Image (cartoon, rainbow, N blue to C red; front, side, top):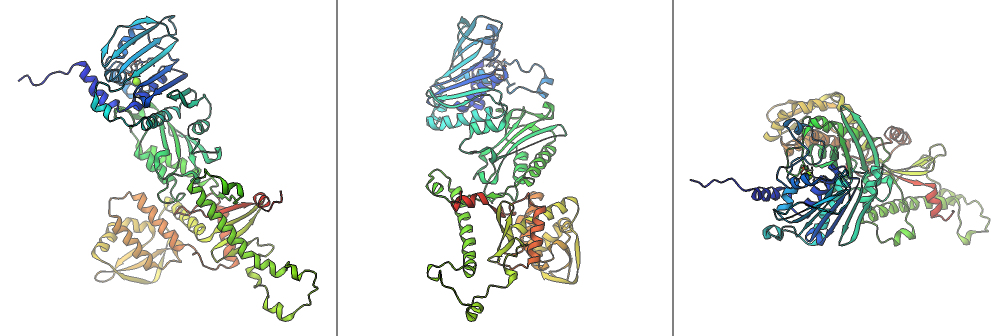
Length: 601
Ligand code: ADP
Ligand code: MG
């Protein structure tokens, strides 16, 4: 009896603080969001000792009068929602009325505020929930909130704070999440009086990204811009080129109506959009700004509102995937070749990734010129000892050094050549390109397969003689279980005696692949992946495998007409520049780079 009691106000706030205020960065987030909701145009955040000692936020927003200031720190006190219906159309960043009360329950807080209508500011001090009186004081229009000694009365929480460096790292991250979409605000962040960010207002999202991530995005062309406005979802995106990809998805920022969110549907859409454009284990840098009606989703599902519930998540997924994928496939993502120069060799601050890339290009160049030098020497002998000698035609010598058959040399009208049976070098208007024949062909097959399958099942051919093969029970199960998928791929398998199946039909596009070999690999993949994988992922993996198997191989000598066909096809696929495994297909060399390299300029 009497064991259950109603908790007092301060206890309620302390418990709420446990959810909302995890560390100094949470305080920064909540207070800056309040300033934005108050219509501020300029917000200054100053932090000392990683936020442990002081977090101060100064804004020039609407301010509060004496009465509102007194109420603002009460639990569940908010000016942003009043009735149930308001919850369905929240346009402000805050609405739960918990932040100020929570913060004031775990720190020493001083608030000074003045409305535009008043010529007098008011201030209020609260020490871990212990609230003083509101009294007049001097101050500008707007609100200043100072939070000192966070968690000083809750040692268990304080103990969890990390070094000042770590905490300021979290604060910077929160600051970036707020600052990214709010381009029209002047924002400053200082730590121990050192200015970390000063972000003047701008009209350009790209500029804001570059202000915040100079180490990540070094030039505007690193980001591809795109947008769409369809089915009441407005999307603006800045898509990092594959060359600025990362080893984690840390640099994928999604905003919904100005609020940073994490959403698994959107993450999946981003991953799919970049499928085939990045190597495995690389993640794209993406800034995605989505605007949609407030009543098409619910923000009231997470204490810090980092997650939302979309009423039509599939629509959001398909819109995001559509606009991103289309833009990426429509953009020339070919690597511009950067020739190695002394300056580059000495540059200390290039990333390991850039170094590898530069080395690869240098190797490709070296290989190309090595291959070509002997051919030229045969025609123009410039060795000093031979100079001046009028050489008599030597019949023996000319036969011995007879140039290779004309078909292997670049004909004047065919401005290409195959080297090492693996690469095609093609002259272009302003230089030349080196194409990885396998990667390019694979890429083109992959896209063709994707496109066909998006519309219908693959066209197939009936084998003259069905080809049979043995299966295990698990494999037979996988065949039965994936009948639809096989049908879509244009593969018909029929039982052919005990533990035997026969391939009856096979996709025309994969005509160059031995049917049984392909089908067996496919079945292995189905068995290995089980039922739990997303259908689209499985499909894409199958298509990658198919494209890889059916594509021209490295080391395969091509006839001129095959090369011409490949190059003509390439024109149609110009936009797509990486094979499904994410390797580049084409490296460009410009004449101007060559001229610089040969010191002609
Ligand atoms: P919420 O933001 O969810 O409404 P808070 O506890 O963060 O809850 O803030 C409570 C109320 O205090 C807000 O609804 C707002 O009216 C007022 N307020 C807070 N910060 C400011 C500010 N910087 N400028 C003006 N009013 C503010
Ligand atoms: Mg708030």
